[in-house]
Length: 83
Image 1 (spheres, rainbow, N blue to C red):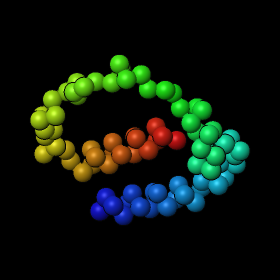
Image 2 (cartoon, one colour; image 1 turned 90 degrees about the horizontal axis):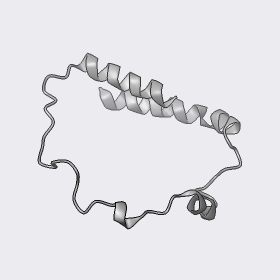
Image 3 (cartoon, rainbow, N blue to C red; image 1 turned 120 degrees about the vertical axis):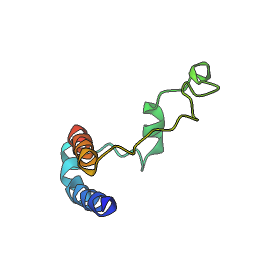
């Protein structure tokens, strides 16, 4: 039942977006004017990019002991942090 909850939250967020955008830089629309977006993006220094990951990609996370309640709390905390 995770997908219906996520879809409902996404729908609610989309409904509130016009009001939010009106208060938060309404003139800034980098998806329309790509030069704005490109001017504000940092240039990547290729010497800072790792040739290989700095973690073991073969390592698996054990999620067997995570309860539905704990997952819901974690999701709610992430949602609250994003607002």
